View: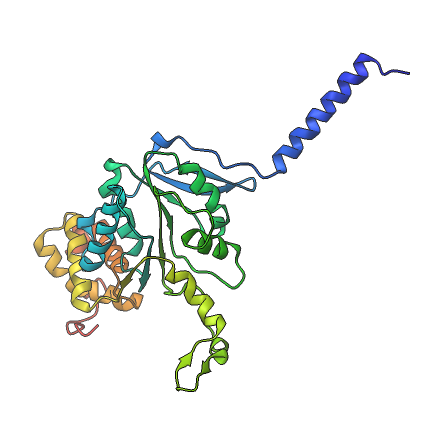
Amino acid sequence: MSASPEALTSLMQRAEALLSRLEAVLPQPLTAPDWSASVAFRGRRRAGRLVLEPVRHVATIRLADLKEVEPQKERLLRNTEQFVAGRPANNVLLTGARGTGKSSLIKAVLNEFAAQGLRLIEVDKSDLVDLPDLVDLVAGRPERFVIFCDDLSFDEGELGYKALKSMLDGSVAAASDNVLIYATSNRRHLLPEQMKDNLAAKMDENGELHPGEAIEEKVSLSERFGLWISFYPFSQQEYLEICVQWLRFYGLDEAQIAAARQPALVWALERGSRSGRVAFQFARDLAGRGPAEMALPSTIRGEAPEGLDHV
């Protein structure tokens, strides 16, 4: 007995509904965003898949805003200039002390070369498993793309580690020439280093020490970045110079800047750091207080007495 047309129609509708639900949970291909919407894009995980969203308010920091990192600035600027010009350039790993300008330098370089076609895509380390798809997506574009991984480090067994390692150097499919990877990290080798890793080290008959396989594996990822740029803790004088630069940025006059020396040192002492980030936070706090509070005597503001220059 054949089914009625109404029954067949109902069956088709149920099948289509089932397929729609299945499509919603199956992995979806990475789709292109509106490339004209911004010069920076951020990878976000939506319903289990990576989506590129334009950054509506891109950080406005400029190279001139970054002080006391001239050698690092010069090296990254030169590498990026080569890349934008279509010449050979390296993937870059920026490592070192926290708050010294690693991420800010990458953002400043984007602003420097955005008019020449440089674009930035920021992805979390957990999304690096989609790195091959991301590279394929932009391969045919005329722009030059920096894939930016901020504060990158891995724990044992994380999937993104292998994906990044293969993409940097090792996969049979090379990244297109319009893509570079810039990463920042407080760890030079990106993986936690443990005492037990040294137990596998061996000494040959000539007395030479050879690290074990665990150490070799942890070093191998960072070695695949062609350019290492190291950042170091600031001295007191360097910290104060950065404070001065940001106070001028916020419009304080020279008298107010001179009076801010001692509060800047107290601020650093309370934070336990003399980084560029701490200097910026101090300047923003002081500029936000207003002229009346900035004019108060230091004892009223609870600041330390003279003689704190050893901070």
